[in-house]
Length: 88
Image 1 (cartoon, helix red, strand yellow):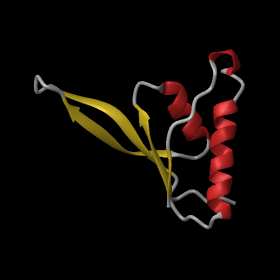
Image 2: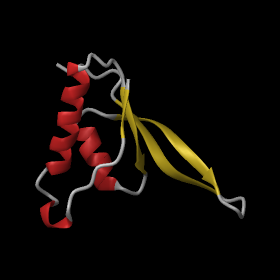
Image 3: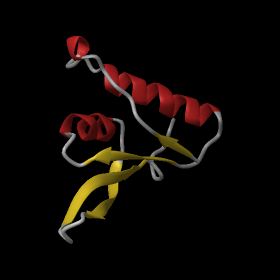
Image 4: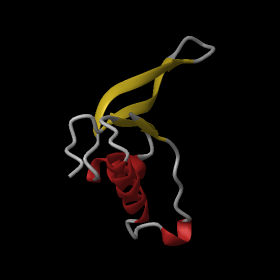
């Protein structure tokens, strides 16, 4: 399997689907390498990143919980997965 980590689009080029295209290229490479599972982590508040991942077929499969020093639980990341995605 593979984990898609961070990618960044310069603010001057946002809104042009560049992030979606970068994800698509990494998924294409995963297929060429015969990987059967691809996943990643996205900050829950990063709606643009979640949208780009979902546009490429990702599904949110888990929420990660962080407990801060005051004992307050706060969800900070969403685990995304392409396990059931047909990469054809």
